[in-house]
Image 1 (tube, helix red, strand yellow):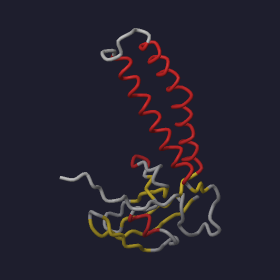
Image 2 (tube, rainbow, N blue to C red):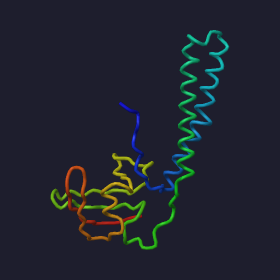
Image 3 (cartoon, one colour):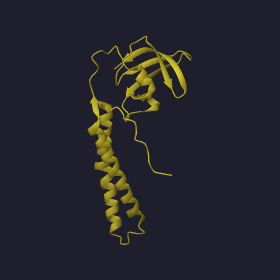
Image 4 (cartoon, rainbow, N blue to C red):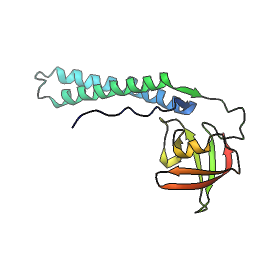
Amino acid sequence: MSRYRPPQPKRSPYITAEGAANIRAEIRQLWKVERPEITQVVHEAAKNGDRSENGDYIYGKRRLREIDSRVRYLTKRLEEADIIEDKPRDPSLVFFSAWVTVEDQESLEKVTYRLVGSDEIDPAKQWISIDSPIALALIGKSVDTEVTVITPAGERTIVIIKIDY
């Protein structure tokens, strides 16, 4: 068995201003609060002598590596992201960062989705990726447009009821 993994599909580089602020807050929390605390714990543990059997030292060093790795990842994502702060020129159409209320034609269930970047997805809030099948089908459409969406669960027909930014 090989360790080869196919490359991930290219994601849209977009992120909302709130998403960028959340990433900056996480970086600040990790770098300014957690890392100094863990560094102090590792420093105190190192003073105790034998480091090979010192749990505080071993787990502290591991946590420092995790923090550094996460900060590098978040910093890179922020550098590569296109932060979208403005509303589109035509707010009557669905674009990135829109709140879209749709009605399923079969179940008559109404759902409001927000189209966000891949770093901001939150199923509990109905925030879906701009790269998801539903979002791709909705992009560029207007109110009262009927859209057929091919999802892993099958084909669905939905109607756009409302668009907000």
